[in-house]
Amino acid sequence: MIAAVDPFHAIAISRLAHELKAQGRDVIHMEFGQPSIGAPAEAIAAAHHMLDTDPMGYWESTPLKDRIARHYHEAYGVAVGREQVILTCGASPAFVLALSCLFAPGARVALARPGYVAYRNTLKSLYLEPVEIACGPEERYQLSAAALAALDPAPDGVVIASPANPTGTIIPPEELAAIAQVCRARGIRIVSDEIYHGLNYSDPAASMLQFAADAVVVNSFSKYYSMAGWRLGWLVVPEALIDAARARMGNLFLTPPALAQQAGLVAFDCRDELEGHVHTYARNRDLLLAALPAMGLARIAPPDGAFYVYADAGHLTNDSLAFCEALLRDTGVATAPGIDFDPVDGHRFIRFSFAVSTALIEEAITRMAPWFAGR
Image 1 (cartoon, rainbow, N blue to C red):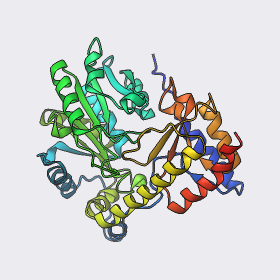
Image 2 (cartoon, rainbow, N blue to C red; image 1 turned 120 degrees about the vertical axis):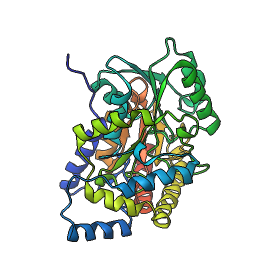
Image 3 (spheres, helix red, strand yellow; image 1 turned 60 degrees about the vertical axis):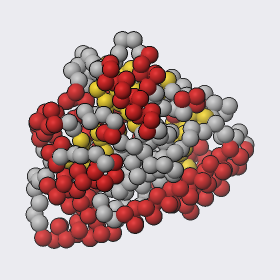
Image 4 (cartoon, one colour; image 1 turned 90 degrees about the vertical axis):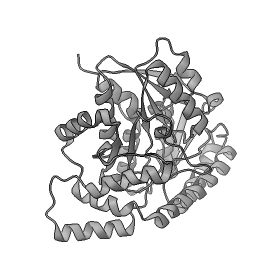
């Protein structure tokens, strides 16, 4: 039997947005979680130099692996060896590697609902069973140790995301420690998606590696480093999984782009420029959090990090996909339907990405305010 995988509905919204733009419409793209600002200037300069001087080929950057390993010591106080770092073609392949290294077909893997659409669909495509745990306002839209402890039978694995997509919520360190303890006691393997680390608006997110040395961690250059199109990410695996992860990476994907690896090594230390982006996102977040309640969208998940606002529009719609399409056609503002992130309750939610310029956020608010008022 071929695995049934649901569509990614935000892609359909984006396709319509580009069609409207081709017709001459002015479109503001808030449907995808990708920074509108490009890679750091020094990283781009390094890429230009490599294009001019290096024919490139299949290559794995030892300096980049060393720099990533050092990052875990500097940021989290965790010792990670160079060979535990598997360079990947973005976070999506890293997630595939993590799941295929840890679980056999039929394994049950828990995850939060709402959650990133590709978690559920990648699990299905690998013939794994998603065990979705409803997480609402009372749980701050996040998994908890208590929820994992209550599952009967225990799942084989769990996907943790902090900060999370679509909500931006962060799991506090003490709760991560409690989750790790439940997983140790129940034999649950942990996959921790940490691609939004660095994008926080209060306390920084902790890494699951601080509490579970055998966790498998996914990360990427797409979000904090503003390098989505470069397709570069990494996986941190415990020593026992190094050979399995390397074998899968080599056979399925060979190596990440050589150009992206060279640029990523430079981008890692462009902190002043990157923190400037975070300040922009923080300003955008504040503008939306002030404007959306005035439009009637007062029930909002706490966006502690990432660059999303996940809002309950249930008083206006029972079809988030049609609602987002109408909003786009009428105002030129593209957003993501909640049905992507929550197949049960997502019909009444929409997600706004604020990873664009502040001027575009202000323009989007100006366009949306009368539209929502008219609903």
